[in-house]
Image (cartoon, rainbow over all chains, first blue to last red; front, side, top):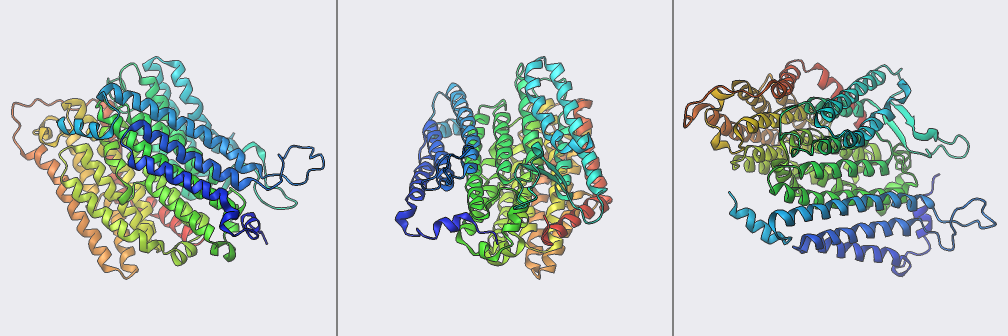
Length: 132
Length: 504
């Protein structure tokens, strides 16, 4: 039967401390989401979004890492333990997506600043309310 | 050549987009983009023929990118990205490519319809990228690839929305970007958890891994489902997380609103169906996670909140956008009732809503082109000034209401039948009641346009042919598929049976 490696790896270290890297991910994720929701400054929102995305990248990287494992480069030179490269490779794509999103968001903020003269969301809402 | 069609469908618009930027000259780019979108439509039609012509027992055309075929020795897991075309996504692809082929030539040669002047090549490049992303989501058989294509389509959609001529388009695009990225990242987290339990990203292999009850009982699987559900709900604009949609569709250029309202949410609905039935399986989703108890109230609320908000609008585009929120509610209702009739209704509604909402946004495009306004109270005398445009508006409106003889009736009929089969007469009643709300907001437009006296003399200046022809093509389809229900309903029934039967 196919054994999910997540279960196999987690079996020996269910204690909260053994999964500390996931705690880091969760803390970063919450910080990012909080900034996105609570801040009015459009640039700070983008930064929050970035932190949120980075936490997911760390989640994938932590997931693929095997303790004591090396990089899976052939020939293996006697090293038999290696980290799972797939999640790490996926994150290259996710980083590219993250950069594209940030660049587009910042470009929009620049245009918003040109049109409204401010990057504070509440000011923009006020300006829109005055317009017909 | 025929074997390469699935890959060609993605590669063609992807390569065409940068060529648009290089060509630069507006007239060249326009013709080129239209040709590419028609070529995509031709490819999807060929693919549909291939899928329908498959021998019995075979349900999918598989295309392994880079020829990374499944290993035959140790495990049968797929190694590379695989594209798969079955009946369900051939149907989605046909809708996306068909709508693109109709919308692309809309208003060709007239200024201001395809982004700001001098930026038309960028508009068409973003448009083709969006098309590429949407078709990629539907055709791919790889979970991570879904995320990548989702972001391609979303990023180009943000750019397209920001091209609206009102400065509020920028804020609309920005809020959509924030919401959309959070949604997309949620999907990414969900895929991560799925990979953690299933050990593969190929959807067919995930399905096999998830047929193991031990795996399904793990908390990781449940969390994965939660993240995927919330992520796709945000992208689909299901009721409580729909706030990005009204502004985005209101301030985007009409052409973009027409395209996105007809395709982006539809493809995401397909992603949701695929997550529910293709990855986790109906038994897990409905019996363990009780998705119906979550989605049904949400869908009913969407139907009423969307319709009531639409009634209160004075801007015709915002009215149609809120109506979309309500219509997405119908589609989600079809999923939440969890029987074949209702799911058929949901899938037919996907098709029908694409036709009628796209048509209505194109009508708005015609009105804006001649009157230069989206405010309903400034549309007095529209019926006499633009009779053909107005007639299209009436047909689209009747279809949104669900009058017999139009497509809107067919899907609501199946939803009501599904609700009755699930022994929930009250749901059927609420569906009909919310249709009555649609009468109110559609009447609101027609009353002003037809019965209120215009302020001055009106001369008959209908929209130009390049705008009327696509609009009327869609409206003719809305009537044709409302009378000849065999095709759409037959295909949808097939797909619904396939989903509920356990095969993706």
